[in-house]
Image: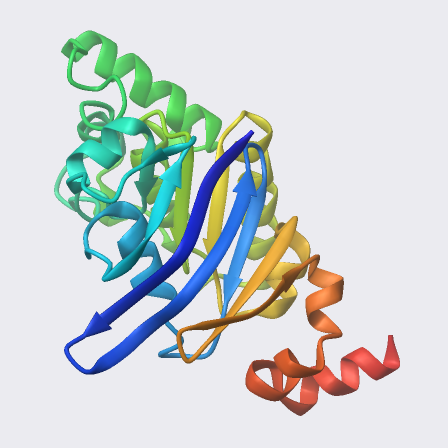
Length: 249
């Protein structure tokens, strides 16, 4: 089933066109990678999907229904969540308490009791392999633990679609490999994922398909291998280093 379909999505800020006629779709259980240079419109597209920024023309369908007129909290309750959906982790409270906040929002969160919220939070922390730190203040977590806490908070919101905006920034190579494994683990649990990252090597590892934006226009989409070999992508975004990688492969 198609979980998200964008139809001619355009976003203007006064005279500046940030997104122009962007159309794409992806399926349930798929990881779609979104890349592009700084200023290409990636974050704007994510904010249009979550309803935080209204788009100018076009439409967005979620599971076949238009979300164009919905407020951000309504979209969240349908099952679309992103990191920092509520707020960054509060450093003065524990990891468990942070995730409990997330479990009271999003899909099915409104009717949860505190006991149910705690159980949901513990499940999310366990899933992200962070249960050993559940009683630790967020301020005492290392970078990778903080990243997993951020994802645990939105995972506790029972998402159908999870938007990850540069969640792997600041991680070392070993941590990136672990992050890729955990993202695929989330996908395998039935959650569709849209990943925004700058590092193409990471996209090759994590994405089923990759879409490339440049100056607010979708220039291509396809498998990571197809995108890596695309001349327009190399010219617009990847640069000579990846051109050399392409020819040596």
